[in-house]
Length: 467
Image (cartoon, rainbow, N blue to C red; front, side, top):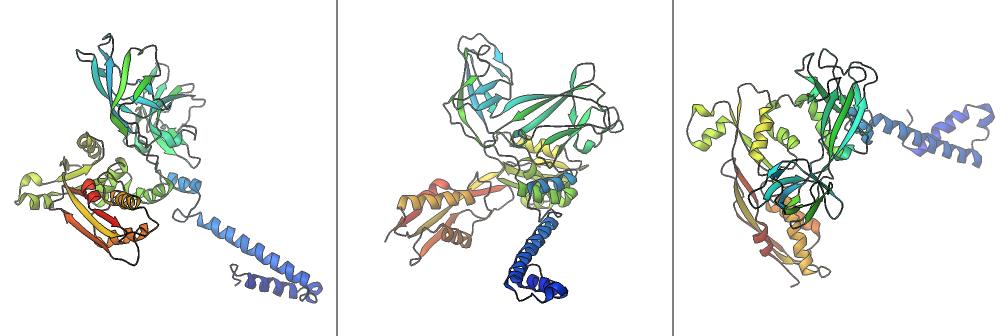
């Protein structure tokens, strides 16, 4: 068996074949044949590598091409998590007090030509003022026509929009005007007369809509008009407070002022390729039907990707917290979570868990109690480091690792992890000791305690010097 990863072995195999040919056997020692054998060996090794690489694309865990990962995720009917827009609060002022209020869905434009969208209506007070929520997103509309009535009729959205899609609304006109149809994952629990659709994501990076079969969901009739309202966002963006926004429809709202009072921050991009790979492997068992083995953390993290802390427990641990048995704890699941800039997190959790068909289980949200710890660090910096830069580098790393709003935050802080992180920063001189101590609360007494870094106290406790 020839080892096609070894050039000498491939050359030897080629020469062995050449030795069996009468017209070549006498020329094996010729430089030209030797050069030719070397070329053939390199071609064989390259071909072997390409075949081996192509074989690796057969498996989701070893696939390198995004299109392959997406195709295998689609086999499992997994759709990537959509982009999440940044959000904030606007102060709205009716200068002439000519309006009683404004509707939702007003498109606004920043000075940097970034579009924003009001997600709720507002009623003005006696002074002509109101506060409304706003998100960094815009709305586009796409129209399609059903050319042939057939089961599982599909329409796809151009790939240029896919990374920015926040949500999709589907309207269908089968002769009686446009009607909003409902989204039903995999067309589950859909009857023959239900106006429902499913979403999919293909290997060409396109979101798509798939309709039913007249057995599960209605097939749109021949000639039916389909309108998609698609909301797009740039993901993680920032607009500081005090900035003014202008309506894109300046004629209608020319005498209304929109000013940012709570910075428009947050947001996240569409799920990346590595996350799609891992989650689609898990998805066949999870499938958004049940929380297998009580893995509520995966469920909530997938549906609330901006949450930086999630915890949950059942009746057994709740009885330990309460200190006594109580029949009211039976079949209860307690959930506590934190998401930056989300005042409605309790309602979001209740809505999400309410969609789980877990029969007689009841979900209770527990507001987390916040506790902090302080990391004290002192050491001798290398001479090529500016002291203020070194201090800020350490502080930034600690915030990313243990900060309240960090999506990559770790749980309990350990000195060994902090020392290892400081070593990688290459800030301190190797010839001197670095002292690290941790004060404050680092271990939770109960499951609703959210523990994170005290950023201000830690910044004051970092000492970096040259001597």
